[in-house]
Structures are given as structure tokens and as C-alpha cells.
Image 1: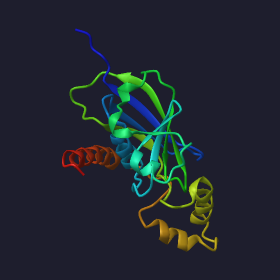
Image 2 (image 1 turned 60 degrees about the vertical axis):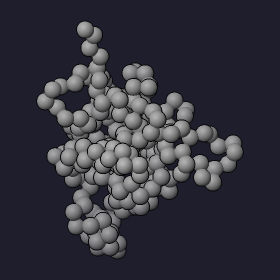
Image 3 (image 1 turned 180 degrees about the vertical axis):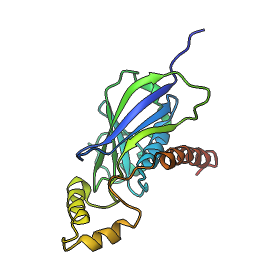
Length: 200
């Protein structure tokens, strides 16, 4: 009997930030791109307040109805992310882009590092590694985050206390809780599947 690797190990990095903010996920290859969206949101702790899209092989995938609303006729077509699965792409496909919040314009570089066999005792999807907290929502993109960090770390900065208050007591740029992140990733997919089954 032929055994085919059913799990993709993904490394996802937010571009333009150093030291990098990244997560490593184990994801079933039958995962829909729409569910991968929810996994990425939860892995980084984004709030899913803004539009998103995947760019894979020069094509756009996302919520076609939302992304094409107000689009020009010459704009590239958007394919429905709920109709495409990871295994629809070659196992050795080059890295692709997940873009979130078209204002702040967060680019997440998604690399399929390797394919793995399923393990009996492992629950999927899973977050197995990561580093650093993601930037606060609506901070102003890569440039805005750099300015935020400058004020956040400098008690003498005129905006230091405002930025600390705005980010919230629990925020710290170096914070990463693997156990909580792993739990959030699994819960997000279950919620998305439940909403789909209920016809939301």
C-alpha cells in the first residue's frame, strides 16, 4: 500500500520586520485556503478585521465577492479560496504570499518546508514553533510598527505612555506563547468549519 505524505510543514514569516516574526505550522494537505486563512490569523493573533488574499503562482485567491466589489474591469480575477486546497498545488511549489489588511499591508511569506506522514498521536493543524508577537492591529504597517517600537521601548519618548496604553498591558514584542497559539489555531479551524456547515 502506497503511503502519501498528508501533512505540509509551513513556515510563515511577516515580511519587512527584523528580527523576524514567524510561525511554523503542520497543516493537512486537504486544507482549504479559506481555512488556512483562519489558521494564519490565529497563529499570529490577528483579529481578522480587514480584507485578505493569497497570491499563488500569479493568481489571487480570497473572498471573491468582497475583493471584487468595486474592482475595475482590468483587475485580475479573484478565485474563491473555499474551493481550493493545498494539495491542488505541487508539493515543491515555490513560496507564496498571504496578504492581510490592505491599508497596513502585512505580507506573510508562506513556505512549504516539507511534506510529512501523519502521526497517530498528533492533532492537526498544529503550531509547533514561532517567535515574537505580531504588531498591533492598525499600527501603520512596517514603517508604523518601527515608529511604535521606538516609542514603546523609550521611556523618554513623548508617546511612550500612549503607545503602551494603546497596545494593551499584555503586549510585548518578544512575547510568544506556543501552547496558547497551538490551541487557538485548532479552535479557529473548527469554528470556520462549523460556520460553513451552518451556512453562514
